[in-house]
Image (cartoon, rainbow, N blue to C red; front, top):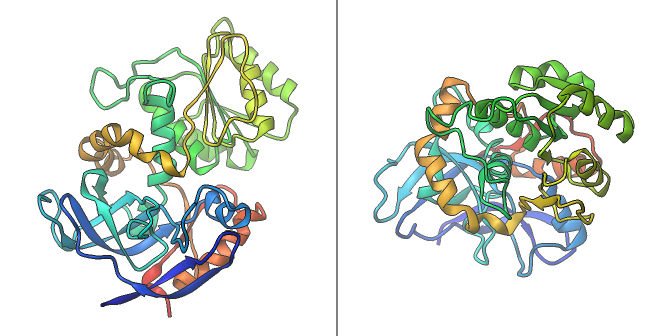
Length: 348
């Protein structure tokens, strides 16, 4: 049986190790086998190891932001050919065949998109998880999303002109995509909190106002109220989702508003305000229909024409061996405004 290199977490609360494992099996119907050229790192990856959360079965291979080259097609796959460059969101399964901290992975062809020629594989690997979180939080039906119409048609683009949105954590991977999707949907104003050093970049993505994340919650609330005037804030997207930011998000909302989050709820809503859009590792199957339409019809085009720009990326050295140091930097909060990406084929 052919083997490959992979980063393996052997047991709960254990340590990551690069080791030889079996390559994924032959792709099944509607699947493809991909040589993983690039894989993005996410904060949840170090949290799984440190806190023993989300995963029940070990050993496990993590990594869910994947880009690479199609090397084999399963039955019924017609939209891809061998050699195509693609990207997709991995999924954590008991057999580890759909995850990305390894040199080969299988993918659901129906939720896979081609990489346009203006993007590298490393840039494409910054997209799937964070973009899914942004897209689902804005456009999935309640209680998993805010239920707005996605900007996938000429009539829905710009539909929400005059509807304010506040994004907490605008420079985060998720926050950057929320800003861009909100811009496509016409939300205005688009108010984001961030370190001010990222302000001009976030405005280039579509944000209209940048608030210094270091000012007090009361100062942020006053600034938002001054900016929106007589309009009411019905949607806050909290791309950080710690207890403090969730509390702030609820304070910013008008009664009847919705707070979209990317972690589990840490506060109790009140005044008819709703907490929606919980996007964690195991929620992808609930959104398959929404994402299949997105990947099939819109996402590659948006990337090619610049409507959606990938995160800025930092490529880690030493292939899969670089992942452990990258995850340590994420845990220590030493990454700002960029996505860490490893290149599995460069593993020694």
